[in-house]
Length: 266
Image (cartoon, rainbow, N blue to C red; front, top):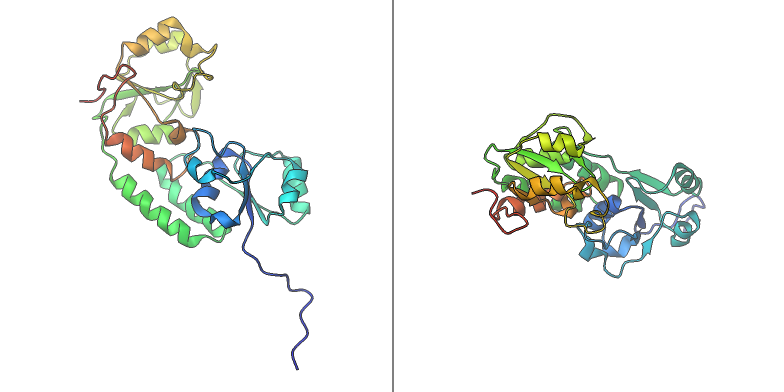
């Protein structure tokens, strides 16, 4: 005689996953099989999304309780998306939250990749991406050749050695012009007093970001235009993660050119 079914046992199904913001999207799109992704954020298809091509035809969502509950996810992945009230409400509905940690160097990239993959039940996917990551890191060429570099955004911000962007530039073989930690503001006056060999520009290809910002100061623009400069890929600096190494490798293996097409590093 067959045993009676255990009423405490839940029906097993593949984990259903949703992500709430652009950085969480990268982990979900990079690790989770398409059939298990019930939704990604409304930023998943933007130019600053590394895996944007994988987001095609996937449902997009915003961090609203009713919308997410209607998707019936088992897990919600987030970096900065959704406020505390939303997170508490989702947990009350027995939806598990996977919070992605902000990483500040490539030494932290693989541990975070494996941690998030384990939470999502995707260790095999993590192994594949970790191998790609190792190959990319090994292929980064020190094109900076010891030159000093200053990272600068249209909003007037730079990045220190304890940030992912600082680590990127140092992996490219540059020395940072300043050792100020974190992300910090550089007034036009301070910027004009600095003398880096090269400017590494962030989001200067974003016309919306360039409206009414310190980076439009004519003296600042003149100084940058007259100096060797190159633009970092938007998708490599919008979110921190293992996947940014893929762009960094490509950047280092192509001639670094400025906005006028001149070669920055011989």
